[in-house]
Amino acid sequence: MFDRIRYLFGLYMDKTISAAEEKELAELALDPGNKDILLRLEQEYWEKEPLVAMEEEEAENFLSGILDGRQPVIRKFHWKQLVAAASILLLLAAGGYLMLFNRSVDKTKTPLSQEQRFRNDVNPGKYSARLMLADSSIIILDSAAIGELTTQGNTSVIHQGNRLIYEERAGAKEVLYNTITTAKAEIFATELSDGTKVWLNAASSIRFPVSFNDKERRVEITGEAYFEVAKDVSRRFTVLANGAEVEVLGTHFNINAYTNEGAVRTTLLEGKVRVSGKGTVAMLKPGQQARLAAGLEVIDHADLENVMAWRNGRFYFNNSNMEVIMREVERWYDVEVEYQDAVPHLFVAKIPRNEPISELLKLLELTDRVHFKIEGRKIIVMK
Image 1 (cartoon, rainbow, N blue to C red):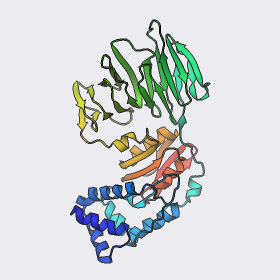
Image 2 (image 1 turned 90 degrees about the vertical axis):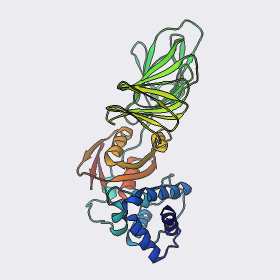
Image 3 (image 1 turned 60 degrees about the vertical axis):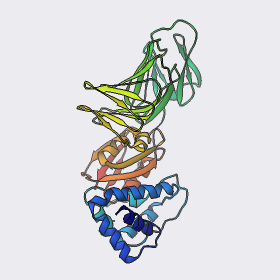
């Protein structure tokens, strides 16, 4: 069955499909059991065509063509590296394929035009953070001078624009702690005194000793952070995050510990980590994810592209509901979200995070399953 669907899908995308074959593809798409196959095929197609994009009018024509049974017309060009493929976005939950092949786009349901609804656009976040020193004094990093900011004990704190570097010097070590905090619409990076690199997502923080002792390296985070831990077999590296404890020697991993996400997610990219919480311990291998909520659960095949999207400078939603999407929007654009209507669908979309909020909202609106309105720093979600 997979080979047949792949064959028909290829004909459709190449514009060589016959009427009978297109009808067969539509009937196969109506079968919920084939949803994962079509998701995989569409993802494979767009990964092979990374420069395929559409302006709004083209995307709507593409969408209408699918809904009306016409073959797609796709033009290749560079456009802010945005992949606005309407067919991907239409892979929704519960009956989505029925709507995909048999439903026309209703352009009259939203009384205001996009230009009117998105008049008050919101810019994306930026590199910025606040550094709290051991004496509780605060340095605003986006306005701080480049170069050495200060010294903390025997450690020099150096500002390089979008990251801080802690360089340990000779001398007696003092137990001093610093905290780097990002607000909404901010990200930042730091290199700790042992060489470990840390990237902070929006609305996150890391508390750490400016100089680690000879036995262990221990830090604490809130929100989300990605770590590239410097290898040191004599000192384990431990991260505390909202009830979870992650221990490593040298590895690459991401921790999502936002309190409104329902679980602490630790995802391993390289090496090996030990995750503990709720009285349970799990050892992770690369590609696995530990989820700590009521208990500790290990997912064997984590969606690494989704996990690392923020670190790689983009949004990536893979069968995500509107609440998940808008929580990321709230953090990155520092906006409030209000739901005028429930949106019971799942969405698949990719877009760079350096775009104004209107570009993401327009992309999601191509599905015709959701619409938005910007009022100041409030985003209203509508059907």
